[in-house]
Length: 251
Image 1 (tube, rainbow, N blue to C red):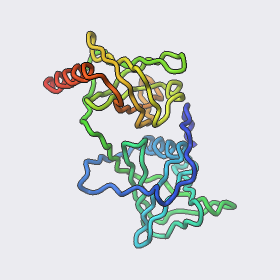
Image 2: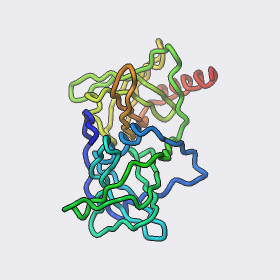
Image 3: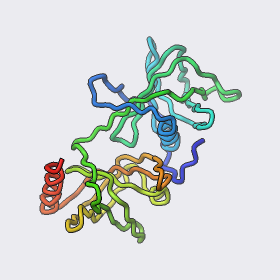
Image 4: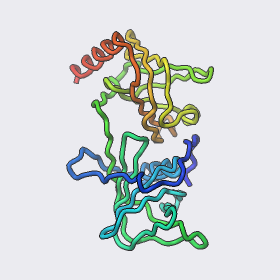
């Protein structure tokens, strides 16, 4: 199983009411085909216990969760909670990623029940996944060479993280695994100082909505932390709107 340096809180067994709708063909989803990215996304689902909705062709949907991920063998174990059974044939798998994104892929009946574990079904990694980011506002990439970052205090500890994008409704932070260890989806961050360039600073309360691990050539393992602005003063809101408009004009 992929060894991530932080461990989000794992949810309890999924219920039928946790089922997630499929991504439609008309949505603005993008395709993810890198095996490493797919393995990291599956590992995150295993760590959080996020429900996975399975739509077998010609059968009723079932709700399961990922139990384990074997990145070397490119296979994962699906925990068929309760009396659920995975029907033979092709099936579509859908799961939420951190509350504001969806992941969807399709697999054939290349699965096996693990010996001595009748509730666990082993499946191969998909060759590709559809990912849909549900954002109320289009995010803007940070201008090249500009200093954009976030600074906040949590439990007496100061955190400083660079921004990788921002919008009128939220910001994206880049965290180290050690920093991400103390965060989770739904975490409230109060009084965050956001530096939007060399001379512009605003203060806002944020809520973590997405956590996604990734790897860079220079920095190694990093974590994407997508945050929604949950509270901001009117004057700060106007300042943020001006900053967004300025970057939009540059584009």
